[in-house]
Image 1 (cartoon, rainbow, N blue to C red):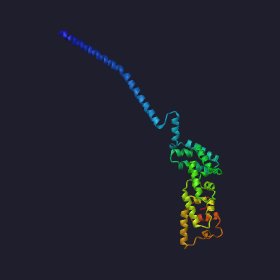
Image 2 (image 1 turned 180 degrees about the horizontal axis):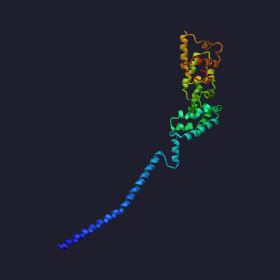
Image 3 (image 1 turned 90 degrees about the horizontal axis):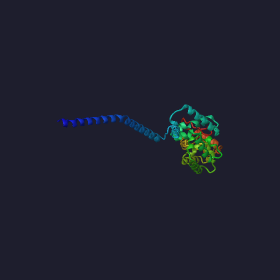
Image 4 (image 1 turned 60 degrees about the vertical axis):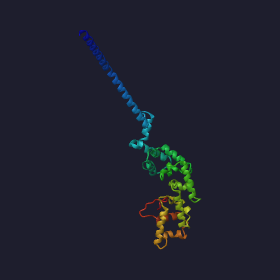
Length: 292
């Protein structure tokens, strides 16, 4: 019995010693394993941060971050920066020959009312890009200061040179052969965005209603007659209703243009009387010659 108990005790002792050694080893490994886990987690966090940065094109402290801030500038108000931008834009338009303060103010503020996305805000608020667009259009109008046209229709800045040239070609066929097209468009730059067919329809309707009037000279004198806002077709309908209520007799002020009386050949007189006689109720229409 004694001889068989001794090996058992010894075995238990060896086993206990081994367990103690393993426990001690495990305790010594815990700090190192924890450190490795923390390092691995930190590396994973860094990788995730880098992935997020790549998603938005940001590398803090680098050029990607600077570009992101520039792209997001329109989303976050900065009164100081906005004042600086407005001052720079005012100086830019003044340098381009826009003398009237009211016109420059409209041009400076056009980005707020017209720009619906970052790209458009950059176009209307960036003097360099505006200057490029103006130089592009200037090639079509060598004798006209295109900057002075923009306050009337700033959306023309979006046109490519090809589109602007195509519109000018279409207008040339829609207007009388002797029309001074650059002069007409400089007075009404919105014609570069207009429906050319509608422009032709307005001219045709005027000529049919007043065959004794030189409509070509009239629109050269009053280019606003060609615009959508003037609505020549609507004005002619109102005039015809007036003539009908008078038993087929036109208003006295318009009679000479129907009959070919004295003054019928005066395009300025016709434009003034026509705009006045065909004014709609409550209409506040401003023509090129301040009539209508």
